[in-house]
Amino acid sequence: MTQKKSGCFSFLAILIVSLILSSFIQTFIPISLYTSFTIIVLLLSWVLGKSKSAKFNWSYIRYSILFLILITGLQYILDMIPLSIAHQESDISEYIYREKVLEEGDSIVLLRQDRKWSDNYGNTYKGKFSIREKDYFSSKQEYFTNAHKRKQHSWGELYNYLVISDTPKLDLILKELSTIKNTNQLNQLEFAEMVVTFIQDIPYSFVFETACLSPYKYEKSIRVVLEKCSDCCIGSIPFGIQNPLGFMGNLKGDCDTRTVIIYAFLSYFGYDVAILNSDYYKHSILGLNIPAKGIYKLHNGKRYYTWETTSKHFTIGTLPKNFDDISHWYIVLNNI
Image 1 (spheres, rainbow, N blue to C red):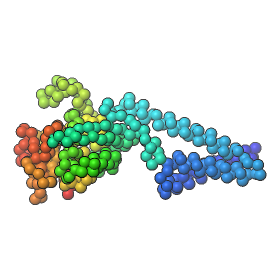
Image 2: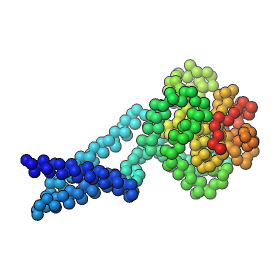
Image 3: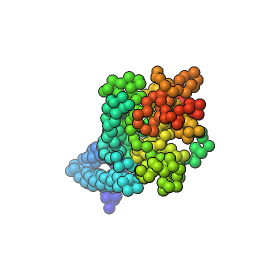
Image 4: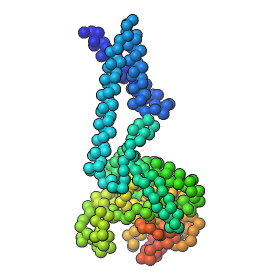
């Protein structure tokens, strides 16, 4: 009886030591925690089994194999749960598909979109744009949970919070944009054109702070759109703006949802970029300090050329006729 207890205690010690050592090894070697833990558990079981007596003790190896089978089964079940729950309960777009990949030795799920679009000058681009499923849900949850803390913030402060929070988790998309830039040898203006049209190409959707209602309950400009596309609305979103990760998961975005994510992209690549809002027009556009022509907003001695992001065919320096009085626009956020 004493020997059996000792064996159980020894195996527990193997598990604890293996967990500590595998965590330590992971900081130096690009290997998953599960893989390093499996190797160390089996190695220590073999060493302990050999040291117990002249005859090799297989008990520790058997314990280890059974334990590893158990945790492998649990890992498989846990991997499957997010897929089924997300499919039933999330608002992920039908144009987004899930793909399981290995990242630094760990299995993760990506939300991926295959995109092909043309810029305003007929140049065609394509790519696979991905975000991690866990980032999609965690960033949205954080945004919703902390929304009450942002109520007293200005629009610029809110936008800046969203950019800072989500940009690190957009790394896979940023990498793909960089690949497109290098492959096509795009200059500064061409790259900005590619990035903006990447977002312009996504169909417009209203983002409401309250729940989406029947079309007839809205003013004519909104009602006309929703009568043609009842799905072009997402509701119960804090402040009526989606965080960038949320937008890249469900592809539903209005004006400032789009300006914020483009601002995040171009800021990352070193552009002098701004977001302009208009209380008069109830709209949000992008501003870019770059050699160009057309309508611009003067700010701190620099020209920020306007860019409409909600629909195709708008180039830098142009605005819709009903939004083109620059005196009604003001810069709410600028990265330089």
